[in-house]
Amino acid sequence: MLPSYVALSESGELHRRAERLMGMLAACDICPKDCRVNRLGGEVGFCWSGADPVVSAVVPHFGEEPCLTGTRGAGNIFFGNCNMRCVYCQNWQISQDWTGQRRNTVSVEALGEAMLALQEKGCHNINLVSPTHFVPQIVAALALAAPRGLCLPLVYNTNAYDSVRVLQLLDGIVDIYLPDLKYSDNGAAREYSVAGNYVEASRAALKEMYRQMGPDLVLDDAGLAHRGLIIRHLILPNDIAGSRECLRFIAEELSPTVHLSIMAQYYPTNKADRKDLISRKIRAREYEEVLEMLEEFGFEHGWTQEFSATDIGRPDFASAAPFAWEGGLAPAPLHLTRPASPAP
Ligand code: SF4
Image 1 (cartoon, protein in one colour):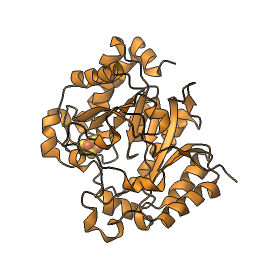
Image 2 (cartoon, protein in one colour):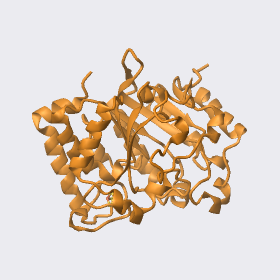
Image 3 (tube, helix red, strand yellow):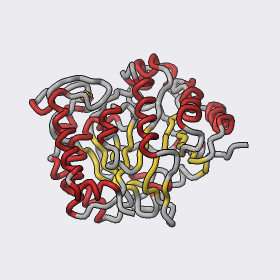
Image 4 (cartoon, rainbow, N blue to C red):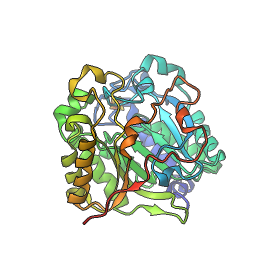
């Protein structure tokens, strides 16, 4: 099962897409922030990112969904900076410290080398974490790595604040979309993530991802994902995420057969203690209510975390092993193991 970007590489189309995307950086509209700054000329917009990629960590990771983690880990590439500003971001050390992250600026060639190194380590995929603001550089790196033998599925692990035009240029390049649908209310998205048009943008993005992938998640005999769409949803306290409307949108405007990943791991970190409504973990009852919605909307496929996931460790990107609680390269921690309840 070769990823489709291999054929695009051989035909020269991958290189052409990379050039087109890189050109968009001259008046950047890579994401729905639509800053129109010239990132090729030294300007930066809302995401504080320029012409070169910022790569904050490259690690085999064992905390993703089982079909991505497998036995040898997902090959995670964590990008620095972000096009959102979630006050509760658990990766705030790399997503919101743009001055500190300058030291992690690398070349496109080095990003391609990182992809090949993760393949060399035996990882099951290349899992691009917070890739949105660096899509052009990622495709350019892929165009260098594919002719050198890169052949792992490409996972686009995003906050869903993505531009449809850019996603269309990723058609045939990305193998697995992994968006986190975060809000169903723009007021909440503005207050907690500085993304006042999040609802329209994320829903349009998810529709485009679904158009490309359809409802099926293609797994191999070992249960590893090779192509498809998995939609995450992080439950927030006091229903700040608007879980019912998020799930209703997925069920009614995409399909209840989509694979979901419901996350209970919210922890008030970063600046969340300044906002009363999200300054605590979620409660068991809040979690159970969302699980009941899965049945109500007829979802059949996916994963839910154990409620104890509210106590899992936090990454420390100041450390050489940001996910030390996972025990290095040990097999997958089991906090994403329970299939979502089947429809009644
Ligand atoms: S990628 Fe960055 S500069 Fe470009 S539109 Fe988005 S936030 Fe603005």
